[in-house]
Each structure stands twice: as C-alpha cells, then as structure tokens.
Length: 246
Image (tube, rainbow, N blue to C red; front, top):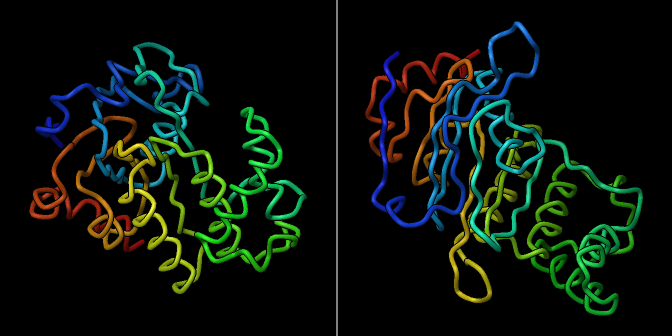
C-alpha cells in the first residue's frame, strides 16, 4: 500500500506533539515496531490510530508519552503541554477511588486538601462519587475505566493518549466511557486552551464518532493520514474492515 501523506490545515500551527523520522527497534534483528514515522499533531485535534494487532499503535502512543524511547529520530512536545495516558486495562492502586485520584495530584505538588477536593470533583464528573471510599480494584471494568478517566481529568492534561480505552468493556460501559472521552476532550482546558486526543481503536464506529483525523499503521509504517471523512471514503477502509471482522 502506498503512503498517503496529509497535513491538515490545523497542523500548520505549532504542533503540540511531533515525531520526526521516528524508529523504535524493540528486538534486534526483527522488523522495527515503528519505522521512520513522521507525525505532527496540532492542539485540539482528535486523532485515531487504526491498524491490525501489531501494527504499532500502542508503541506509537507509548513513544508519544515517553514510556518507550526512540531508537532513532526525534520527538518534540510543546512546552507546558501536560499529558495523560489511559490503557486498555487501567493501572489502579489498591486504595480507595478517591485516593487513587488525590495521590496523583499530591505527587505533582497539589496540597492535600486541594487534591482531595479536586478528586471529589473528578469522581462527580464520572458519576462515581458514591464509590469514593471503595477499593478501586474491586470496581467493575467500566467503573475502573471511568475512574481512570477521572484521574486523568483531575490532572488537567492538554494531551490525552488513549490505548483502546473501551476494548475490554461491555456495550453499556463502552458507551459511558466513550461519552466521557467526548465530553472531556470537547470541553477543553480551564484556561480555554483546546484539548488534544490521540487514541487507538479497532472500532470503526467509534473512530467516526470521536476522531477528526485518522492515521493508519501497518507493520510499524504510517501508510495513511487523512481527515476522517476522506479516510472512510478511501480504499484503505477495506483493509481495516478485514482485521475488524476477525
């Protein structure tokens, strides 16, 4: 498949994150997990990463969050642009739901009383305030993902990185989490700056609902970067349908 470079008009502005000729080699002698990827994302964009299992989606997200170092190339992040990353299965501490949120704020220097108040506000935003004292690991899968969203929202991130955040949820929980993602990322920051979201998904309906731009990966290579409407009118869609039907 031939690469289809696309630079949306919004990306002409200073990017919030940018990868330049980025390669990630996880295992010596094996094909790279990311292969010479160029990607510029402007503030406020909603970018979906699609591709088969093993195409490089999770590696790309982890690289953008600096959890995975580059082998070659460069990563630029806008100064002061705080990031939060959510995984398919949330990493929660064996603490109450409230303390899972408050601890992250406290570690970033927020005074304890303020951290607890903001944690309570975050729980209300995701309708989990009644479970504030419940052990986070005893919550249902959908509740845990909502808690993870609340924890991220409390940090006021300018960039959300979401690795298949609804893949393991039942249909009802999936709709709840998707609605919260749309709400949080559409609302923007308290100071009025836009929120950027970059998420991976196998759910093409979800991509249509949440994304403004689609990046298609195959074997670590970026093969398409298109506005969502153009992507779903392109032949590359057929390749995506093959892996979603498996």
